[in-house]
Image (tube, rainbow, N blue to C red; front, side):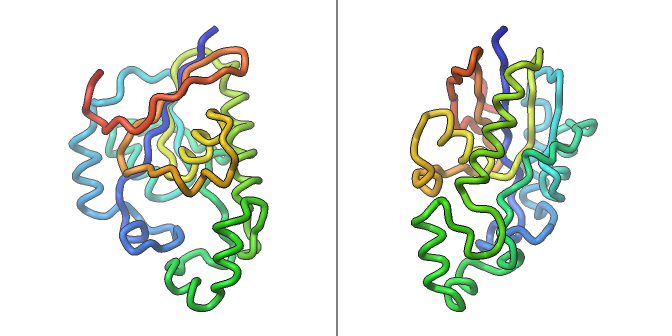
Length: 192
């Protein structure tokens, strides 16, 4: 059985524009307009899912995936006490901690989740999804896409920061028996 999984990165929010660690803020007006414009760009879905964040839920709704179920395994990276702060603010307060976090995937100086643990968490979800029939579509935070691209390609977790995931793009995974292929970064509404 070949499994098909499409991850759609959530629409833009004020937190993303400000390089702010997610603080639960909603999609901004431009992001909402673009998500609504892309509604209908996602073909038939057997299993619609959503990361449990406000902006992912709002994006899924705007795309017409209103029945999408929360997938806690696809929650964004837990940045602990840095949540709500900008990268600039945290870098000013804790420059050594930020440098360590960006260079060592196993570190979690914010008392949250390390990049390594995060990549493992979402990779377990993808492996479990290989045994689910039909087409899965999930609206997720960009770091979920990053983590799965890194793991699927067998790249080291240090490559996590080198993967750009623009808002409202689709990354598709297809495979069977533990072997996945990746089709990355297609803007929604652009066909084959």
